[in-house]
Each structure stands twice: as C-alpha cells, then as structure tokens.
Image 1 (cartoon, rainbow, N blue to C red):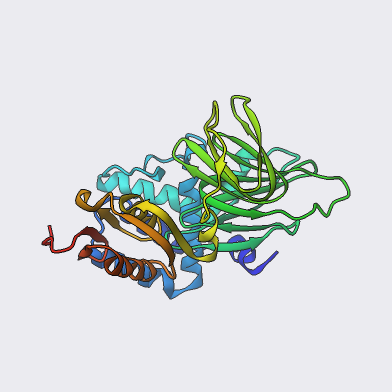
Image 2: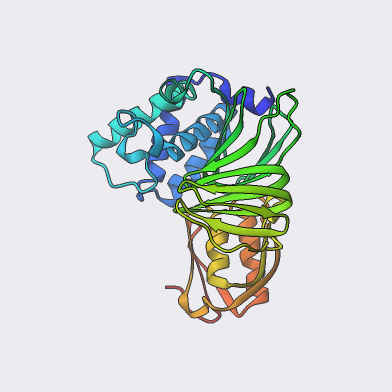
Length: 336
C-alpha cells in the first residue's frame, strides 16, 4: 500500500468529517461568497487530515447515484437545491457519517464475496493525480474525476464514475491471466496491451487509444475493437464512428490543455473544469479559434495564466467580477 492509499484508509474523527461535510454543503449550495471560498481553501490546506476528509466527501458525492436510497441524501447529488436550516443540518450529518465510514459505509452493501475493494481514487477541481496499482498498471486521474479499483481472482476492473482516466496497463503478475477492463455507466472497455484514455461525459463515454488496442462493448451489446491512434464515443445502446485520435487526447495527464483550431467557447468550457467557480465565454467571441498547448499548473493560478495568454493571442479581455466569477469577452467590452 502506498502513502496515498495509507492516508485514504486512515480513520477520520467525527469532528473533521463534520467540518468537511459542512464545507461541501455550503460550497454546493450556490450561496458561498468569495470570503467563504478563501476560508475553505485555508481550512483545506491547514492539515493533511482536512485534505483527506475533503477527498472522501468528493468520492461519496460522485458515487451518490449508486448509494442505497437510505444513504443517498438529496443534497449529495451534483445539482444541489437550497435547503432549510433543518434540512441542511440533516444533510451535513448524513454526509459526515459516510465520510467517517468510507470506504466501509458503502462497501458493506455493494461488495460481493469474491470481490475485493482495492482502493478509491478521486481528484478535486484543478487536481491531477497518478497512482500505480497492485498489478503494476499506472493510472492518472484528470480534474474532478473518480474511479473505483476492484481486483479479484478473475478480473482487474477500474470503474470510472466521473471525469477522465489515463491508463497504462501492465502484464498481470498472477499466473492466471485476468483481463483489464474499464467500466462506465454506458459499457466496458477491455485493454489489449495498451495505453488509452476513457472519459465520462454526461450520458456517454469517450475512448482514445494511444498504444495497442481496446475492445469496447456497450450495455446494449454493441461491440467494436479500437486500434491505436483512433477514438470514438459510445453510449448505452451504440457507438459513434472511429476517428483519428486528437493529438492532445492525453496531454492533460502531463498537465497540458491542448487545442487545435478549437472554438474559444469550447476551450473556455474545458478550462473551466480546472477552475473553481464560474468561468464563462461571452457569445460575441465564442467562435474565435484557439490553437496551442497551455500549461495548466496549479488550480486557479494555472488557469489565470492560461487566461492571460488568451489576451495576448486573441482580441479578448478577461473580466474578474470576483475570483470565482470570470468572463472572457471581446476586447474593449466594459465589465457586465
């Protein structure tokens, strides 16, 4: 077990879990002020145990759709509704309980006898993290992503519940070969000696193969093998046509955001995944084109640098209403 896994498995006090739950509910309520965001960042960086609790809160939230009804509190979903004081306190307590119990709290109901929960890996906004799995395979998680790693005697499985994962598979060290598969809500991707990227986007998944090949099977039974240098999307019932893989399909794993004649609106939307708060592209400049590879760096500060580069590359300016409310608009446009 590596240092990250050891930290994730360490017990958390109820007090710390409650603090993390309170921050989560506030930040997802739509009522957090700029001062609240600054206070949260100060709390999160004050101690390793705070970061541990926050990552558990993210992991619980990202799996809320698969929690049993008694545990899946309404406010754990991605779209939070405003809660009264009593409802918010109940939500905080429910989330704190799950944070404290993780991973046992949800493992108890979803595990089957032959399956072992190896670990849970998650990243917050602006984070990218890398792990080496028990079989020697390497995974890198993009911003705001979560996977469950489940290895048993017959299968090596990584379930992507949110975001994107880069995978470089290793030969199975066990004498009995176990297939390596990545599952999403729409189907499964079986690796054939490969490096590849899987991304979960709303109700569909996207796959880009960098080396080797993968076998894709949708939940509806459609199947196709995808070779190196190709990419496609699939949903539960079917899949799109294989196309040449984007040159920057896995650049995010190296901390780069790549664009090749990309619409500015699409580029800003992609950049917003790495930044806290609200980042918007004004319709008047939405169709400008962006080409280049941009260093993402740390959360927020790295995206600030990317936004500053856009000002030099395109006839745009960046309006900071607050640090967490940013608009890219036409140069010379007064702030809204």
